[in-house]
Image 1 (cartoon, helix red, strand yellow):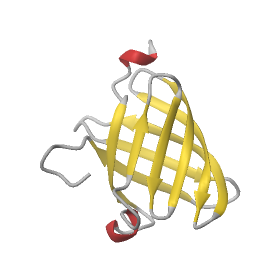
Image 2: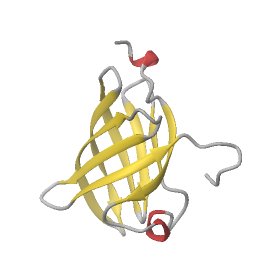
Image 3: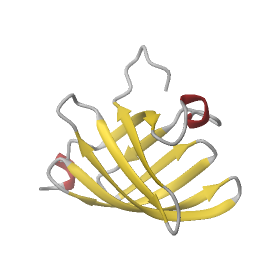
Image 4: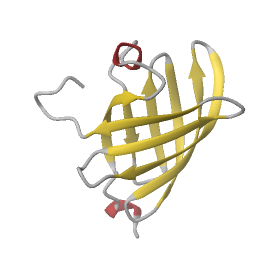
Length: 113
């Protein structure tokens, strides 16, 4: 599949996580995942901001990420899959650390982004 046709392209609003509550997710701004057609992207939630290197599947992506969390360098890997209800399930793993599951939706004009 061509990257430009991947249904995950664009911006997603992270709304839920198994390890953190919504207040933490939106600590410094709206939690989000951005997937670009050029193999790059960005993930932000809590105090973490990371750049992504993305590989594309039919209705999923896998990625490695690297960034900072409260001033500390962090990195890891992840996977995101489009679910039947149109939401996105994101699995991330910190290198030598926690694993988390997040849920994201497409932002709408009436939702805070």
